Length: 458
Image (tube, rainbow, N blue to C red):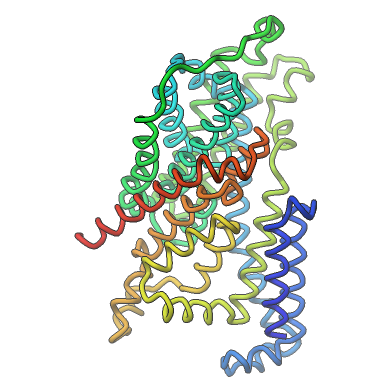
């Protein structure tokens, strides 16, 4: 039974990684993997527990303890999912009002190098305020209005992927994995921003500087058709700017709300969503239903990527089943014995995230290496130096946030941002591997080296 759980998880993982060849959505594979893993666990509890040496097999009689563990994990997972759903709704609401035109209308340069830096830096900071997936969608949509040639647009889209992942790594709301670590209390807002801003910036600057010496000339902008010029805007400038300011303010306010009230982040995001809901209902109350519906929260909810939410639910539940059964504890011990230090472990996890999804990797790491409290550290004895890496804002958690967030840029399938860009622009996997992967790897290693250097000298 114990081996069967691991086999089910590996097969499920392969189905997720081979989503496109199999033509089966990864959300379906993740949900089935989760259900099968927990089913095997509850049916085989009497066999599994003696193998992990817990000595508490009796507590699992009739599956009662397994059910309690499932409820416990589901509570933690729900906090992440509700936060994501709230954030996604706010961003979609801004986009429905064309709020991002505040940014895009101000990009006027045609020079390749200048546009490269402008697009990359906007993506970097926008990703920290929104998230890397949403920012990629926004910026790739913008590139269609700025760059006519498809291959050249692919190149800029590749840089957007690197910038979005780098920007998301230093913000608690910039990437699903950093959000997971923040909600799990492994990192704090001040800790992750203070420690990862410079490494993340270096991760972006390294490939930009490399490219600045080789890119020359100007881009050709696409011609604007008359029908597009005459198209009526769905919102007024006042409505567009108001929703943009309130939406970004709601996202940025979440860490402040958590610090002041000590309530979970999803409560802060729900507060922001509620305020935006009321405001949009008020400003559009005089419009007819046909114009009002696409601009309302009710209309926007249909645009939410529910498939991604179900994928996160499935994969996080599957990982939690392995944590309950004891698989992840064994993997953690193996990594420590084979690699020896937290730097090597995290760099390996980051590179692995370019092949497989970073969400289950981070979820697994969170279960493999439990958060160490100050009390536990005082009782650690000879193991104090190792365990100190796993305190709140410890070296392991901070570097994990960086590596899992930016390592996925090395392959286009390694991050949600990359997959989004690939889908929107039909970017070829091999083309990305030849043109962008080396740049992403250079940035990844440069940023990791920056963090390790600061941590070592500090």
